[in-house]
Every structure is written in C-alpha cells, then in structure tokens.
Image (cartoon, rainbow, N blue to C red; front, side, top):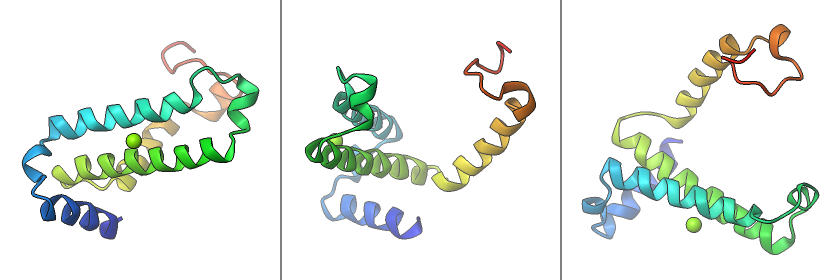
Length: 112
Ligand SMILES: [Mg+2]
C-alpha cells in the first residue's frame, strides 16, 4: 500500500499535477471513475453481469485501477491508509450487522 501511495504521489509530482489534486478534486475524480466502472455494467442483464467479455473484463480492470488510484491519493492527503480504513469499517459493520440478526437479509441496519 505504501509503495502504491508513493508511486501515485511521484506520478503527480513529476507532472506538476499536485496543484490540481485538492481533496475536493480527488473526491470528484474518484466519483467519475466509479461512474466509468458502472458504465461497464449499464444495461447488462443480471446474468450478463457475471459473464463479462474479455474486452469488458479489461475495462473493469482499468477502472478498478483508476478508482484505487484516486482513493489512495485522497486517503494520502489525510494520512489515511485505505486498507486500515476498510478494516476498521468492517469491524463497525460486524457490530451493525450481527450474523444471527441479518443472515440472508439485504435490509439496512436501521430496518431490521
Ligand atoms: Mg477511468
């Protein structure tokens, strides 16, 4: 994770793009990349969404890379490690969604 963070920072620094990478802009860029990822699945049937073509799989790989890049860049601006954030959130989710209460249900925590 640290290597990826450093590589992303170097990439921006070498191009003098840090001036454009405010937290606000990084959050917006992240959202755009998530939308590009969604576009791959737009109009596919449920079944088709499990069986991507080679081309779609290549696009998915690129968009996951873009999302991860902006997410990592945004987190770095606040000295946060996205992996640590995810781990901490999983602990919160485990408390919000105890297995015995939610197993097999897609309801939100405030609906069960
Ligand atoms: Mg993209």
